[in-house]
Each structure stands twice: as structure tokens, then as C-alpha cells.
Image: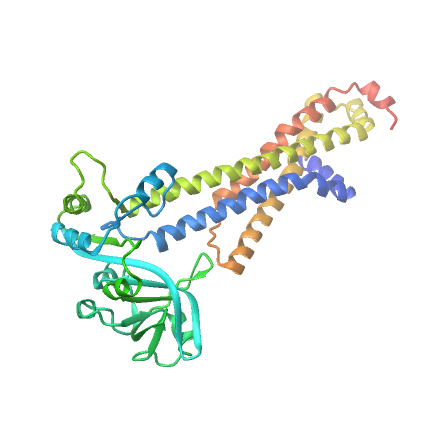
Amino acid sequence: MHILESIRIALRSLWANKLRSVLTLLGVVIGVAAVIAVVTFVSGINDYVAKKIFNLGADVFIVSKMSAVETNVDHFLEAEKRKDIVLDDYEAVRAACLHCEYVGAMMRGSGKVKHNEQSISDTTVEGITPAIATIVDTDLTSGRMLNETDLNNHSQVAVVGTDIVEHVLDNTDPLGQEIRIDGWSYQVIGVGKKKGKTLGQSADNYVLIPITVYLKQYGAHNNSISIWGKAFTTGAPLSQAIDESRAGLRVRRHDRPGADDSFEIETNESLLGIWSGLSNTFFMATIGIAAVSLVVGGIVIMNIMLVAVTERTREIGIRKALGARRDDVLMQFLIEALTLSLIGGALGVLSGVTFAEVVTALIGMPSSIKLWAVAAGLFVAASVGIFFGVYPARKAARLDPIVALRFEM
């Protein structure tokens, strides 16, 4: 009952001084809410990146001029000086990689799609070889995918995303209709399956055209292709397919023996590793900022508890005169400080989760609530309360009962 009584006294004190209580708990609430929101967003984005963006599969690799996620400025500047990867490089990899089931090439840009008076901007325009659709698992709802005949004949045909059908073609039957991509005419031969949004941006505003036509329309100058390879699912490991591709490409690009590759080869594992490093850095930086808020909140709690000790000096004297021991008074004030901080922690958890859910609903930012993060938030809040409540509690416990009974406010 002693613990329950201390909790009841703490709650009664909070209720009696509502404004002071809000200001006291504000630092803890903000700190815990920031931690919960950051963990929720980082976890959600990590899950999304793993499943939707870098989900290449364990048997896929990408060859590119520079890394898709570059963190070193010097390496970035050095990579920019490399020769572009061209279709002849793609053919070299295709010939060298004997353990590749598929090898494809891709170029990507953005453009404007128009049909009659309807148009849509910022459309992702991808020039691809047919194997790319197989490697990245592109599903269609109608029509057909680009094939080798389209590639070899430079056919001006396109597979479009659902945004093109909805906003440009007015939801009419798109197959056989003509659209214009940056002024060039293309015939729609297929429609991709709806993907939804990626980090708040539509993933269905795209067109796929033969890479040979892409080069013809946009030119090869300052446009480096990426080469995608998919190793056989049985037999040789991915590393062997990568080694074959690297050897063939080094010969083709005349890389000197012992010199670094003039290109990057990345896998799902390497891309996720880079992303994980970036997200962890962001996470730690934000946690550091939140820690400052928690420290401020803890100092405010300590200050308020010191005020409470002063206000309740006569009460402490009476309790000691009636037989309360130092440990009893110490525990009472520690429990009150802990109750304060736990209430702030609970409000912080609720605020952080609510904020994350609202942001997700408004802009589609991926979020994932982790139970361990909720438990960690409450634990941190409790730790702050105990740490900053020790001094006021010890001061209350050491009060001389005779002096305390004579105290006048």
C-alpha cells in the first residue's frame, strides 16, 4: 500500500498543479516522442527499402558507372570521371557471364507524356532490354511486354503504368493508342500492374520503351546504362556470375591489371548494407538530439521535486515524527519522480506513434511500430525520473523532523 499511496500522492499533485505538470513533463514527452517517431520511421523505411526498392533477390547484381548510394565524396568525384557504360559493355557482359540466366540493360530519365489534350509530367522513362522485365518481375494487367523484335527493329512501342492510363488516356482501353513522350510518338502495347506509392510518390507514373529507341531519342551523350544480371538459381553461386561479368567488362574497358574497376558491381546485400549505415547514422544523430530534450526534462523534474520537498517540509516532519524512516521518505519521493516521468513517457509514446501515423496517412511515409521501441521509450523515461529524482528524494529523507515541524512557508 505504501507504493500505491506514493503513486496516488504523485497523481494528486499533478492534478492540483495542471499547468506546472504540463510544463514539467514537456521535455520528457518531446524527447520520448522524438525517439518513438524516429524509430518508427527508420524501421518502416528500412522494411520498405528491403522489400520494395532493393528487393533484387539473392541472385541479382547490377553493374553501373557509380554506386546507387554513394557516401564518400572523393569516391563520387572519381566515379564521375569514369567512361559511361554503353551497349557494347552490355554485350560484353552478356557474352562473358556463362552462369547468368538473364542479362539486361536499362537507362532511365524523366519526361512528359501527352495524348490529345491530356498530359502528365515527371514521368519516369525507362529504356530497357526485354530481360529487364524478367529480372525485376514486371507484371502486366493487359497487353504484352517489350521483346527482342521491338529492340532490333527500333519499334516505337511502350508499356505504360496505370497513371498514364488514368490521367492521360482517360481510363479508356489503352492498347493500340498513341501517346507522345517528349514529342515522339509511341504505340501502347502493354499496361503494368498497379504498384501504389513509394515514399509518397506514385510508382505508376512510368513508361518502358526499347533501349535502342531511348538512345535514338535522347542520345548516348552523358547517359550511362546500368547492366542487370541474374544468376542461375541452381548450380554456380552469384559470386561466380559476378566474377565472369567483371572479367569480361574489364577486358572490354581496358582496365589495367591491378587497377581498380572502372565500374561498380552491387548486389542486394551491398545496397542494403550501405542504406543501413546511412539510416543508422541518421538514427543516432536524432537520438542525440532527443537525449538533450530528455536531459532538460529530467532537470525540470528534479527542480519540481525540489519545490515539492520545500512545499511539503511539514508533511515530511509529521511522517518522520509518526515513525517514518529515511528509506520510507526516500522511496516515496523516488516513486513520485518515477510516476511523473512514466506519465511523460507514456504521453511521449502516444504522441510519437500518433505523429508517425498521421505523417504516413498524409504523405505515405512508411512507418513500422516496434514494441521494443515502446518499451525502450518507457524505460528511458523511467530512468530519467529515477536519476534526476534521487537528489530531491535524498534531501527530503535527510530532513531533521524537529526542524521540519517548525518550518513555515
